[in-house]
Length: 305
Image (cartoon, rainbow, N blue to C red; front, side):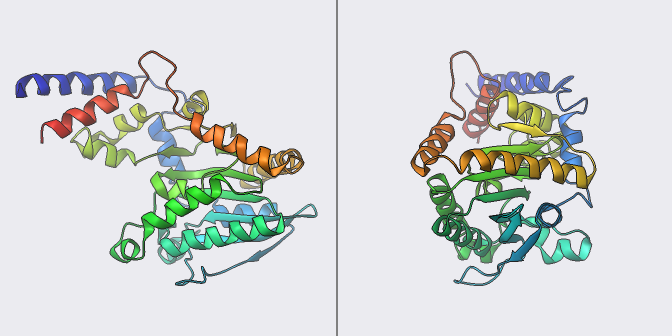
């Protein structure tokens, strides 16, 4: 029996490696290339995009419960006469800022600050824009003690029924629950070199493939690029990456266009559409989906323990 399970596991792993071969769907780049680009030092972050998009911006600090988390930026910006609440993961623009911002990995107070800003936006009828760029929420002891899981769960609950339009943009790494905590909205966009997944390729390779050196193959099998996720219907569209100023202009155009449309709709229709969109992600419409081999690997690795 054990030998049969091992053979089955080997077969599933070979299937995953087959999925990874010659996968060049990220604008001529491999999935691993996109992973590296999304993590690139000096990549334009949330704060830089906010400054380029807004005519004015007032940052708001603190969650009114514990403290202020520099890894989560939030505030109110003016875009062509419209007040918009901006929320985003902040990694920092240099090494000093990277350390101060914990490389974009927020503690519970960061997500509670985002929740505070979202509720304030709902109260005053302001639309919300979220910029996602994090490898995940911070997994440290203090973060767990202060309820990181509960904070993200509350955000998922509230953002899914928030009575104001919400746009989300994945501008770099979109990792795990850290990305989901501010990633629920009416429309979700990705920059062309961004990635979005439940776990990093290194974590996937270590846990499922039992070989950390296979992170590159894992990235290809995980289908985590903007091109893949558009094919699967997870995101609405891809925003082309040019210079920081040109990319910011494209994001701004998207924000203005979508809010002109969404702000004219009754909030009840917005919430109904948002819930339908969320529930429709990952629907299986028959046949063997690309991710079935990943589930097989996981179940077999668990049974072999």
